[in-house]
Image (cartoon, rainbow, N blue to C red; front, side):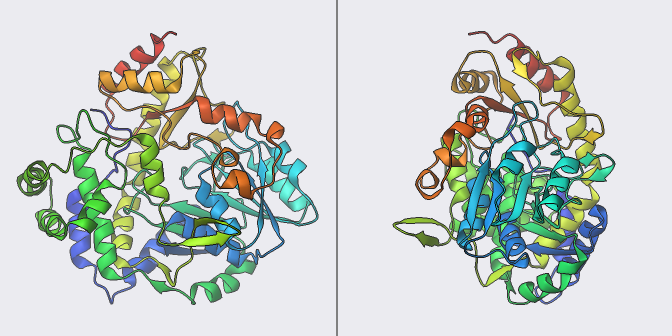
Length: 459
């Protein structure tokens, strides 16, 4: 089975880095933050436990509070909206465009009121129109936040996405451009905000070392189980399978740690695969909807009237040295990883029928960075039918971002004020976008099979 996503890891390098990382040594953290900030040309960076935490800290740095309005697209993962709501602010939903699947700058400007304090834009492989959006933010004296959870090293007019906003944030989840198992990074581009950000960050502690072990060894397990000959042909493992498995089973955690010490994949095949098979741990048959629900789970809730949303804030939001050590190694390998993703993306652009499957428009001056290549299903067939048929052919394609915009999801359809008539494109994207695998382990033979399958698919 060709899986939808597989984290790109050099297990040998990661193992050696983990051996050097200790709980009391914060040098890997500072090195990771410095290297990441330098890559994006930002004056400040903070490694945190999750991408959503980075957004919450960004909003706090900007002073977002009750009564403020923040513009955000509706076709987005709900945790972005959760962060706004958790601070008592009001999300104002903007529609997306059908040509590049990003937020529509005109919809942003229509949503601005005297109470608007910030605009959040999300790059979905193709960078947003940052020149136009930056001008809108300046015109209305709003802060600009860039969500780069899906996009690292994309460019717009010679400048990297993530460098336009006052702040930007990144995710290091299993399926993100680089992965530390989970985690995120807050970048501060506006030097006037550095002192405020440092003051806020000083109020938080680091994730406990033992919890970081679960995340890191869960990442290594996820890398192994998504490999050829291991991933279940008739199953669907969630992206947090590894992390949850080692958290639940301390014996498995110990086995993964010992296998990692051997510095390669042999230890995993000798120690881990028999254990997984013996305990039938690879027999999960969860749906992709369950995958999203699993990833959205949180440690607590925030009460909003009679309804709850997942809570993000916690006293321990800062990344520790284990995940930072992984991040350093992944960042070193990122250029090679991205080159392979770009190559795989180009294959779809060159070979996939553009009438049946609408490609995102890529304007001159933009350089893309995809973790999955999204196309618009114009065949007349339901996505579910295509997804099911693809699995029978041996590969996972489907809606692996969000199957519906936020305004159609409970409890946000009750909590938020919006005009549904102004969000038609968001709903269309939720029904029709398909994600195709471009991760570095996708070979040309698999790409050819996928394109042949999709090009021959008729209603």
